[in-house]
Structures are given as C-alpha cells and as structure tokens.
Length: 509
Image (tube, rainbow, N blue to C red; front, side, top):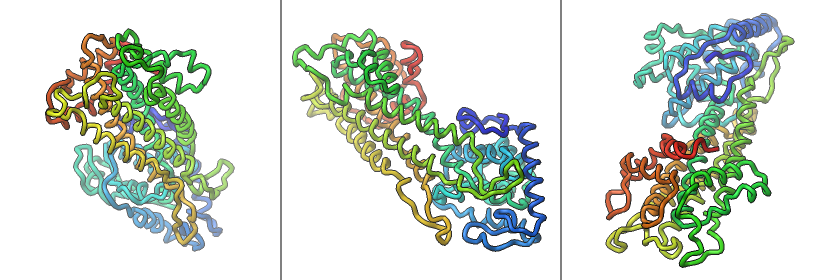
C-alpha cells in the first residue's frame, strides 16, 4: 500500500487494518515531508514563538519554550497524553488509526521528518500494535489519548502487541524487529496526536460491515415475507420509481431477486385474506433503503476526511505554519451517530417480523413460537427475547454522543465532538445488528420449512441448505438453542448468507 500526499481510500484502510497489507511511502511523500520539515526548522531557529514548535500546548500555549527544552517538550506531550483507561481497543481499530495518522503525516502539512513517517510504516509492517485503551478521547484536538499511546510505541515506550498476539514492552518488540525508536523534535509529538484518525477508521470499517449487513437484512426480510405468505407485488420497481430514493429501490430489487420463483408468496388472499401485509413486511425496503441512503452520506463524509490533512498547526505551501480547528471531529461524529440511529431502526423492524412469525394469531397458520409441540415445547420464544434485548440495546446506542460536549484544558477546548465515543457505540451497534438479523434468519428459515406443500424460492432453498450444512438445525423438539443461534450469527457475520443467495441471484445491490 503506497501512501502519497493526496490521502488514501476506504479500501486502503481496510487492506491495512484488517488485511495486514504492507505500507510504503511514495517518493512524492518523502519529498513533501522533507520540504515541510525545512519550514519547521527555519521557524524553530527564529526568536518568534510558533504554536507547537516553540510553545506549550492547549491552555499552556502562552509559554515560550527555549530550544534546549523542545525535544523534552515533544516527549512529554506524548507521555502525558498517553493517559487512556479501560479495556484494550481492537487490533483493527489501532491499525486503522496508525495508518490514517501516517496518511496525514505524508501529506506534507505536518512538519514531521521522513524518518518518523518511515518508522510509523515499519511498525505497521512488523505487525506491532500499540496497546490503546477505550477511554481517553473527547474527539477534539484529535483522538488524543489513543494516538498518544501509538506515538509512545514509536518512542520505544509503553506496551504493544506483537504479531504473535502477545503483549510486551514496545522497546522489546522494536528491538526484535530491528526498528530504532524515534527521538522526537520540534512539533513532531504534537503532529502525531492531532487527528480524527480513530473515529474515522471506525467509520470506514463500520461502513464496510454495514454494506454487508444491509444486503443481509434484505435477504432476511424477504425470507420473512415468504414465511408469512406475503405478497411480493409491493416490491415492483414501478412502485419505487415514484418515490425515487435510491436505497429504497436497491432494497426492493434485492428482496425481489431473493423471492424470484417462490411458491409461498401471493397466498395472502387464501384462507385468511389480507388486503395488505403489516408494515414490518410491506415497508421493509423503505426502512432499509433509508439506512442505505444514510450510509451513502456517511461514505461521502468519510471520503472527504480520507483526503484531508488533519493537524494543528499545519504547514502551508507558502511557508506559513498556521493554527486551525480542522481537528474537530464534528463532521465524522454526526454521521457516526446518524448511522447508529439507522442501525437501531433496521434491528427494530427485523425484530417485529420475527415476533410476527412466532405469534399464531398473526403468522397465518404457523404453530405458536414455531414449536414442535406447543406447550411441551417453547420453540423460539426466548430466542425472540434475546433479539428484543439486543434491539433495546440498539435503541440506547442510538442516543447521539455528538449532542454532548464537555469542556477541557482549562476551558481552552470548550467544545468537543465526542466522535470517538460515537464510533465506539456504533461498533457495538453493528455487532448487535448482526445478532438480530441472525435470529430473524433462524426463525424465518424454520417457518419456511414448516410450510409443508409449498416450495420456497431457489435462493431461499440455497440459504436453508447452506445454513443446515453450517450446523444450524431445522424444526424439531426443543434443544439447547444458544449453539444454533451462535452458528447463525457466524453464518451472517462471515458472509456465508450472502454467498448462498448470490450463488443463485447474482450480486445483490
């Protein structure tokens, strides 16, 4: 993965964070780093104070720092700001954070020396992942504590996880891989800490996961419609063309593709006629589609941020080093929160379909709770409880973090974005949405198999066959249910659900 001066793409981030791709600095980036460094060193030699170069930081920016103390100043900011607490942050998040910081450093706007950037790349390539903690970022002046723990490892201090997954002192890991710790100079400590890299990395990964989950949700919604003997006429493209939201049209097209050739749809006028299906079935494309359009907006914000150089102060091409507020995480924080709202609603409508499948009064002929011998067997009663608990948690996670602000640094940093917190809760929400869809999948496939004498769509048959091959059992007497649900969760999470469907339908939208 070659890093230049013009930013990176979402696929670059995923390749490094999750795929372990190696990182290389472009010649253009090395030249830009060297040119910006010359500007910083020229300013450092002048008597006039320059923020981040020859002054303290934040509320302490009024103090001019003499040349002999400036290296100590840069070391001290890293050490003091590496103040995170709580559980360790996941490896892919830390790798994304490190890579995105390197992206900004390579822009030539930070004044960091080329050798510092190269050491950042060396850590990524060696599979050394600094220990970063859950709490410590307010999403303003950058993800300060998380980035500081990464910068600390560059200095050969603190702890890090090696490629073998063992946490050791960073100094030992650097030595084992022949990496020389960096000795920070003017502005470099500050430049390593001032960015939205953690929240941005989590946004990029959440979008990748949600792209899979929204297509999966179209599949589970289609299976529930089929199991409930609903009508697929509401999926007709001409109906969605007159309300031209692109996400809605895509979701409807996906559901229609899954249901192609079904012998279960269209029975809503049989023994218990229905004029219309319930909202949770009929409006599935509208809800999932709105979430897809929310993702499109979030992706636009992420792409802009991936092309940005986020630091304070920044080195400009005309030689100025100027303070700015570009480190504020509001643009990223807002879409992280917006996505959490969409995720909660998608989980909520999926749970309503599951509940309908289990209720004999609304399931159109299915046994209570899809039980084998209702009363003796409880069927999927408590699977729906678990799903409901997850949905309730999704609703709590949808409360926006970005609407909060808590002042810091003696009121110098008096408005913060809380973007890191928004990203952390979205990450949990995405994880829980996977489980919610797994429960709907489990219930819908069982219900379809209970519709004796009716033939499901070929795509549905492929899903059921693949699910059974994955160890998820079909209808029958009560059994220990947690292993089945865990296997269904893995089936959705690792993409096997989509693979089974797309082997029949071709790629979903």
